[in-house]
Image 1 (cartoon, one colour):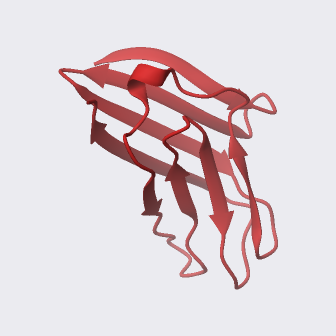
Image 2 (tube, one colour; image 1 turned 60 degrees about the vertical axis):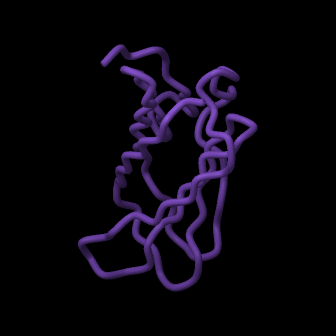
Image 3 (cartoon, one colour; image 1 turned 90 degrees about the horizontal axis):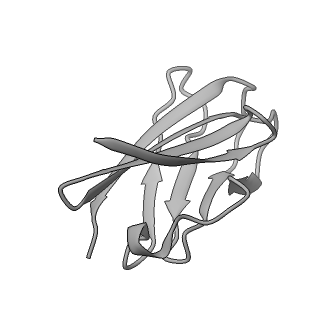
Amino acid sequence: MTRLASLVKNGHTYTADYYVSRGVVCLHVSWISSDGAWKSGDIGTASMPEGLRPAMPISVTTCKINNQQPIRVVVGSDGKVIWSQPGGAQTGDAFYCLVAYPVA
């Protein structure tokens, strides 16, 4: 796989690295969560290149070892990667997510 670029915010707090190989994009997302519930934000200060964006939004939910609320990650067809913490208590722990999808 070829690493193409990173979408980085706040130096290291949020990072989204994307790779491509044989028509498949793999997006590795890592971030450090904020304490509190019902928060959301974007990952990265730029959008993914147009040729690597999914045809429609892809939504995944992370698993958490501490059994608190999961984090939802959405890769939008506009190239933005966003996260949200729906309800419940949250920790300030780091989270990771891997999203893979074909390029049209």
